[in-house]
Length: 369
Image 1 (cartoon, rainbow, N blue to C red):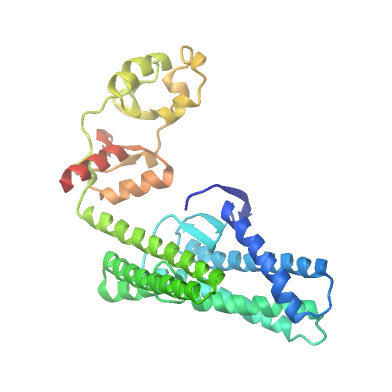
Image 2 (image 1 turned 90 degrees about the horizontal axis):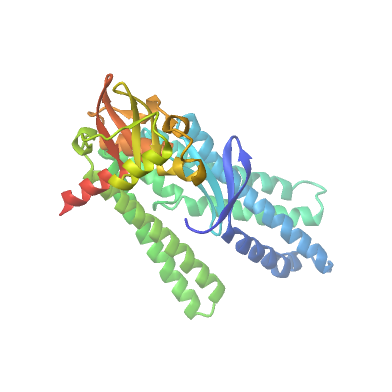
């Protein structure tokens, strides 16, 4: 999801971000409630009261979306699936999960948690709406949020990826076929079909004169179609990696730096001459760190002549190593998770080579030709 976003805090240790598009939809929701919904259900109130209730209801709506996403996240954490962040944006909310669920059962429980939370919230707001003696504004806000949460649960249960129902479908297909990639491909196709239906429905609404609703359906359909299509391509890419080991794509011609080199020497004699984006740092045949362009860019140019590679490098750790017999997907996942561009391939204490993001991409490009 492109565009600018800001982190506004953490919930259960998970970064919470707000996308720039959220402010647009927040304003639209507030305007719609203040101009149409509340004047229709609360008669003879002052305009500022309608606008105040619109702001409160809009904030509670997005709080409901956040709790929905937290439902997914807390179950995912239960299965040790890491969560990168939760982002509130124009279409609601999205929890970014760093890797897939380990089993069909975990996939099902993670997916179904969100709709269950929305149903519970809907029932909770229904309880507030029928509470004896509840003030009319509380009833009006509660009834609106009851309807929205129940609609959110129903919509998300549509069996098309990337909706929650699509993930439930994938869990079932995965359990039945024992093939994660096949299950994802089928659920993504169903998701594309549902997205196409939404877009056709949007076109119908526009032609019928319901422009706002029609455009909204078109936007949601386009977003879902793009997400499902992206997932389908990603699965095809992952399938192309099946059977590949780290040893198949690593480079054995390892050029290493000494920890005592100055940064000037490293740049002139290695980075500029060879054109690589990073080098392992070795001491007596053992890796002690990694120096990349990222570390160099963080150091002022005038200090390159006095600082050494050993003072600037990222110290070597277990996470920077990988065995040649591990699948290439494991290397890619580790590089993505730890934001690394390269790993040292080792067998015991022996350095066998390097595996890099660019090397994997180059290998796959040549393989497909």
